[in-house]
Image (cartoon, rainbow, N blue to C red; front, side, top):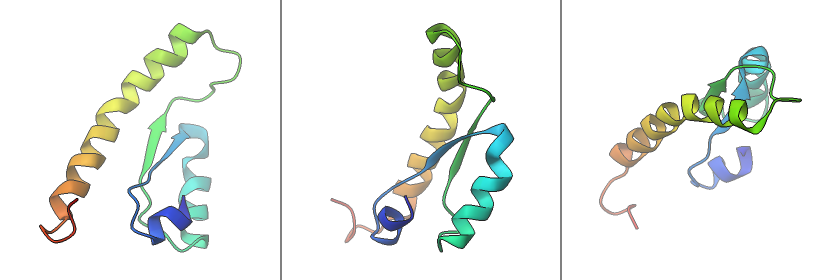
Length: 80
C-alpha cells in the first residue's frame, strides 16, 4: 500500500480494531503516515460469512468517505 500511495494511487488498508495502533505505526515507518485505515471489529478468523459481511458493511461508510475526500482533493488536471 505504501508504494501505491507514494505513486499517487488511491489506497487504504482495512484493519481490525485490535491492530489499529500497529497499522498507524507501520504506515509511519513506511513513509505514509496519512494512509487511511478503515477499522473493522476484531477478529475475522473463524467467523461465518454472514458475520464477515456485516463487518464489511460497517466499514463501507468509511470507504465511501475516504473516496469522496480523495476526489475532492484532486484538481481538474489530475482527474482522469
